[in-house]
Amino acid sequence: MREIHAYVDSVYAGTGGKGKEIEELKEEMKRHLIDAVHELKLTGKSEQEAAASAIERFGGEKELRSIVWQLFGAQRLFAKWVLYGALAFLLICSVATGTYWTYEVNNGKENKAIAATIQSLLAGESTISEEAETEISQLVGATEQLSLVRIFKMSDVRQSAGSDGDIVMQYRPDMAQPAYAYERAIWDEEWKDFYYAFNDSEWFIHLKARQYSTAFDVVFIGGLSAYWVLFAIWAMVNAYHQRRLTPGWAAAFILGNVLGYAVFQLAWSVERRRGAIA
Amino acid sequence: MRELKKAVRMAMLLVLAFIAMKLFRIVASEMEE
Image 1: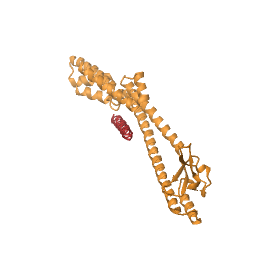
Image 2: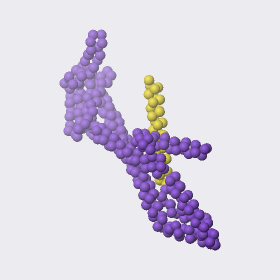
Image 3: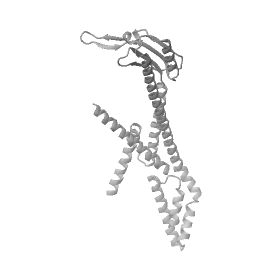
Image 4: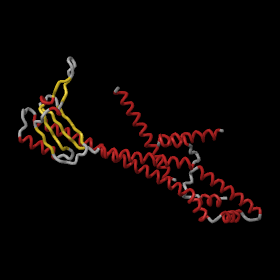
């Protein structure tokens, strides 16, 4: 009967023969063929002849394989590409997040370093010299993200506020005139303000740096949503193949994504174990 | 409070690692078939 097993396996080759549904179909096909072999043997044929006749009766291998592939292969291929698509979106999303995060962290570090350099330039000075002004404008101009620097006298921005007995110190650069300001035109549709007040310093620094957070949010949320939807579709197709798709599981895939699918697999293995015990 | 924050961050990392592992296994088994 080796020919029968080899024949059935070859018919289902390339269709992802691990699925429960396909295993059942293969078993059924084998049963039919083996019955036919037994019948043919009763007419006096040898086992090999009987197997060859049974296979011939069932249909040519190529023809049958193409029908089976059309039925299951196309579905499996679709599911596979849906999963690969989901993964591609997740990867794009992760790389974009990593890149943007690194960019922001590096910019933050650079801004702080520039503020510290300005601070050390002005340490002990009561006014900002022309030399210092040139150096500051060069420092800011050399960066990619800074469009504005304003330097205030600490005494101008520091104010006490609050009621009697509850006085707090606060910084109000919006209420003060800067001792020095340098602005340059860069694309900064979206920006963030950074304020630096160092200990024991006479100077208060305001830097304005551009950001890409909205563009990044669009990429991040869009990519993640695409991944989420595609993965849920893949999980539903898979559950459908296993004849276990219910509205409950569909909801679990949509809401829980990978975790929902993990629970689905766990439920399946528990079910199978129970079945084996019974 | 800091300890609690640390524990929550640790738990989130564990969940993320589990999800990544699960996804990796799903894709590996899909590629195998």
